[in-house]
Length: 185
Image 1: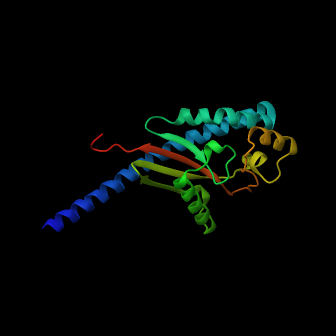
Image 2 (image 1 turned 45 degrees about the vertical axis):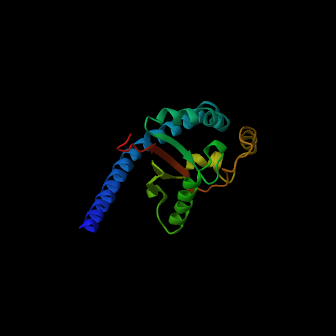
């Protein structure tokens, strides 16, 4: 009888875990589009106002503020990549592992637009959604960056590794996290 009770308790825990994961994944997924749009609108506006150099400046100054604005308690929203421009956006060990999985999944034929992963890690819900390299990204992140723009990027980001991308390649990922409340909290 004790084994049956333990088994049923474990089964209920797995079901509750799956339900919580599904709910948080759905909630987290709703935060990404507005964050993405805000970033894109900011870069487009900066491009129109002063070209690519202005866009690089806007990215450096405004992107962290935009991430903060979209990080609504209990969520923390950001971006990361295997090749980052800003070292503050470097992936942690979990994010790096997920990004490497995205690379493998994309190589196996999965569409980047559908690549996402979520799980509960050390008391936190973690989620990532792939960012494909779009046409608008290529001016600053592509293989043929104009020399005057490359000089500005080199000045603002001396450790830049976020170049050489082709249209449709994995550029990086949106990353979300939130602490999980337990019954004891």
